[in-house]
Length: 83
Image 1 (cartoon, rainbow, N blue to C red):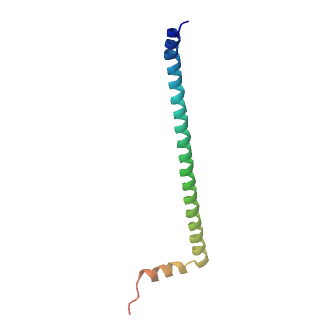
Image 2 (cartoon, rainbow, N blue to C red):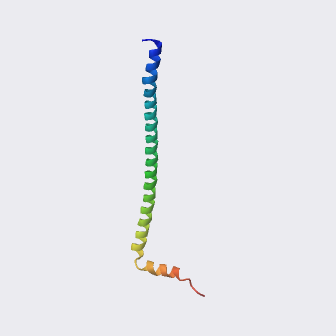
Image 3 (tube, one colour):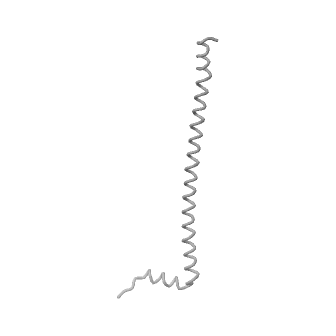
């Protein structure tokens, strides 16, 4: 096998192989980055959900502690007092 045959074999076999491995590597890096971003988004939603749950707990406590008085207080806040 001569030098010309080796160069042709490298061009026919080597370059496409390198190109395929490069593409696969870039695709895997892209996929990994995408998964990291999705995990960050999910974590952010989890924190937001936790804040909302805490607010609902506070509201439930207010309503159950004061009962009907809450409705009266809300109505007093809606209607401004006239002097």
